[in-house]
Image 1 (cartoon, rainbow, N blue to C red):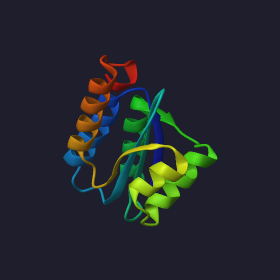
Image 2: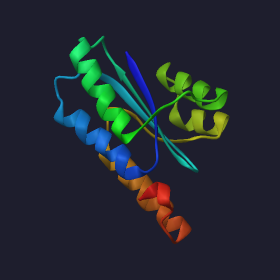
Image 3: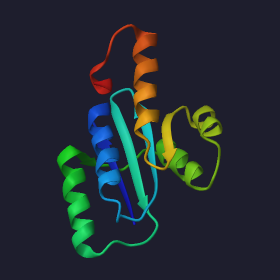
Length: 129
């Protein structure tokens, strides 16, 4: 079972991480976060299927924050590569995407990416708010 969503900014992405940590009974296999110029792609894959109630609750939460996403071929290949164990560095070079996090949902990786990106630009774009 997997969930693929597009979010407007970093704060919404961090809310998903917090939600997954607070719902420790969810069998999260991994979470992938990719930053794009106009938003964030988040994929959450469960290690096994959720009961209908949990699935519905998670989908409702994710739908409040973003929209279900159908990636283009480049992002689709990047997500597939990460899932098959390819290195995030190799994926970033091959598909020209910014892999912020892959594996256990990690707030620190997202915050550090945001901090470094903003420092490099000298201002905070809306997607990093």
